[in-house]
Length: 140
Image 1 (cartoon, rainbow, N blue to C red):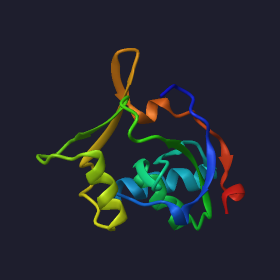
Image 2: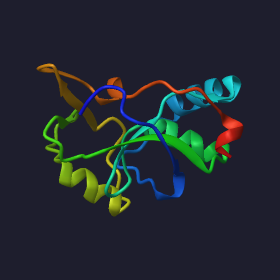
Image 3: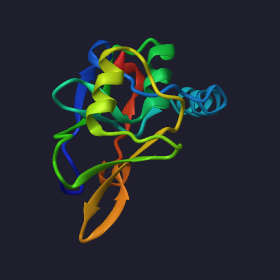
């Protein structure tokens, strides 16, 4: 996995959540995105099943705004450079994440954190994603 992964536009109907969202955070981010009228951060997606790895709050906002598509970065989830870390006292595997998403049985908010190895260090997976500036009108 390398920095500056390619960004694609994806139909939001194919995306699957594996975690719930924090309503307070959704509201704050919603107000900012709506006020700016620009989408700036792609959602990170597991390429084979459409499972969201990072960006659940932004995905919820896209649905609320009535967007048909959003910018995404598709990743090979089973690339050894990508790891899933649990933030709660439960063991979570990549297979568990996919299963929960496919069964529409999401984990509590912030159960997982996806990281990747870059130059021997772990960094949040979102750090590998380029910033975009796409007007919301182009995503409806």
